[in-house]
Length: 64
View 1 (spheres, rainbow, N blue to C red):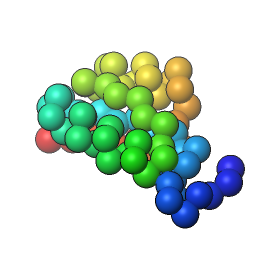
View 2 (view 1 turned 180 degrees about the horizontal axis):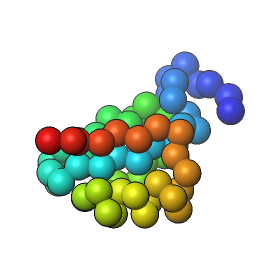
View 3 (view 1 turned 30 degrees about the vertical axis):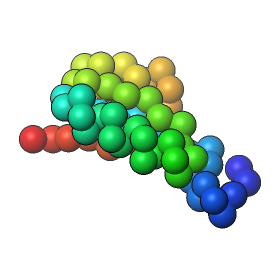
């Protein structure tokens, strides 16, 4: 995985799990700008399925 100084997180796969559409979309924008591959999930069940299917490097979860 090469690092591009303009996109320092290139190649990192992230699953972002949040029930707020605004938070999901904002997180997606920022993470993609940094070079991440982003998979979105709107709840825990959807998130668990996406984690199993996509095997991410990082998982962001809203626990409240």
